Length: 177
Image 1 (cartoon, rainbow, N blue to C red):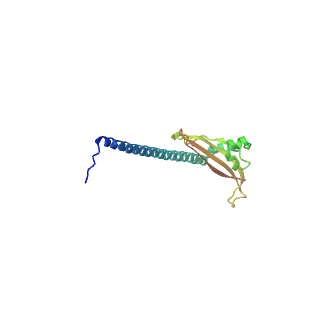
Image 2: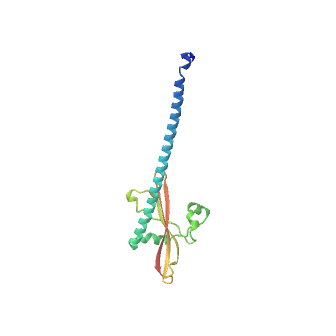
Image 3: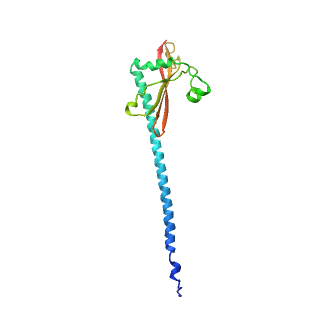
């Protein structure tokens, strides 16, 4: 068996180039993995903020309902809402309040409510009630004795980062005819 004599100068540096290319590939893979993990962390954080403002808006609606049911004095905003003008339905009004499209023509302008949850540091941006309509109750048993007065409550919660949630709920009271 014959041995080839390859000069040492030709072999010098090949290992260094292979190691540098391998190091470059590992660096690109590490940076990509860090970017994906940062992106996933932001997505999880955004979901958490979105859930937080959803819960804040729902809690505000529940607190308002509790206040309305506590005593008659707390129902004063509902009486004020009943006395408001019928909501305009021109293009500008529909753009400002898209919920008007789904409400009956008897819907009135909104009445702002004092937030109940701000004492705990929640971010309630707006909170209001709107008179929707008055008509026979749908329960069938007391249609001749009572009239149902229907309202729509809405609350919007926001964070400084821009997450927000707008929630609405119907509210109905039975009155004697």
